[in-house]
Image (cartoon, rainbow, N blue to C red):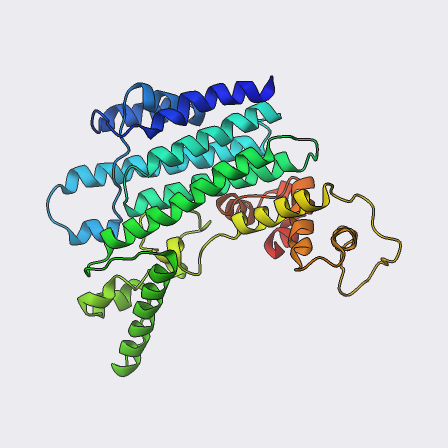
Length: 357
């Protein structure tokens, strides 16, 4: 019965987004609904009203373009509202607002459907929003997967794998759209290679010209064909450093560089352990002793013991994810940043372990 409810929701918000014709971009209606509705409700209304997700260019791209500046700025404001709505729903989830498997399934379905809606546009903002949905959905799946009896992990894992593939495709389309050079990228590997070459060319130019600047100050001095490859300095960001606080800056490396999130990778390893072993060990092995220099926690030792001689050491990542999930401290990157920099009595005691994670 539980999963039937979720499948009804999927029928409402997932399948319908496969259609390609939309009525336009009624931004007033979009903004009004975002402010009044929860994320699952908003996703359903988006389809009902045929609201089209606008292409959201980066502020950097917009400043270099001519034409419909006012309309493009408005689209960026809408994107920021949507980003804040996702953060709001994440906070609601972590604070128990989605307190059972049914409501968690509905939120995952809403995030999956929203990601499909978002990628109607191939702008910088669309990619950031898409990745935000993807990451939060993976976190929720990790919490569901902790219950070894929960039967629908594989179903959601397949859906999220599709979303990840779509994320790569969207990033490549955005790259071609934002890059001032005429370039066609056919794979994520090619995209990253081109980005890395651009960053290396900037380093060479800076050294050859004796320029000791970074971030936006360096970009102002660079020749036009290199400006795209120069992101703002992270130190220029306000804290907490979330997708929302990055919204007005230029951080293309967030999409395809070293700033990529590891949540998806960690959850995937957690799911592999679950599928392979069929349980999450609850008791440390008899050989484990307090103070073990390699197996620093009993959970890590127990996961290693169950993993046995199988290839790879994903057991360590799986153990860490399981510990964080069990403690209610497995968070997406934005929430992690908020928890670190919001010094409340509630999280002061666990701040060290949060930073280490």
